[in-house]
Length: 307
Image (cartoon, rainbow, N blue to C red; front, side):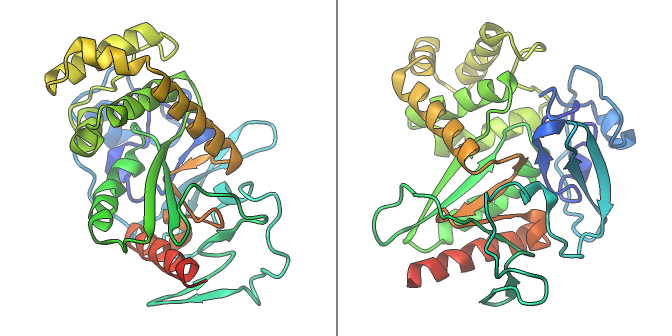
């Protein structure tokens, strides 16, 4: 979410189903008091306090930000179990399969009857993937400061341990502005150092529990963001020299470029969003909940593996 100081807060992390691009004008987190009192139109203080872990609230009303043609935004309440199509995905595909309609949508048989055009969107044409032959690529587009990405991450981590071997899973950090880019550089730096599996959760914790946004108050101040992140890495046992060398390395620059290309290719304007094998797009709202989203991703991947 282009977080309007994330005024909606972590307390609503599963009630609010996506962070939207047009909302993320600032990456800083609200104080605990602001989170409990905030509405979708309120702005939180610049500095963050310690933040509490989000509790599941999937039965409550969902909110979603609709992007208007003039660049403004409208926050709407939507029943969490309505299954309505996510407007954040409306622009994902250049063309949606003409045969898809509410009356005669293609379906996927699994533990649940998933409905194309309702629970997931088919991309036409399908996009190329990086998965080896015989494997199915699953991408999660996310942003470290997004409370919804933080809320679903334990489910994703659990799923990673039990997913079929034929699924190739990768996260892609969005870069809608300089604040996002700074956090993306941190993500890909940890990856290049072989520390991502060990420290990925620590980054989420530092931001959403400890209240440290890990970027400068001015997101455009890249040098200050680097200083803050270097200090954070030092606490985790990574020397300044090692961190800085990787931070400005060619592999990290190339990873950032690839991530930016993927975000643009799939027209991602809300996170967390999952793309399965370059063909299907889904999020928490379209799947009617975080657990259902993980099941949907698994079922779509299984269908692709059978082809």
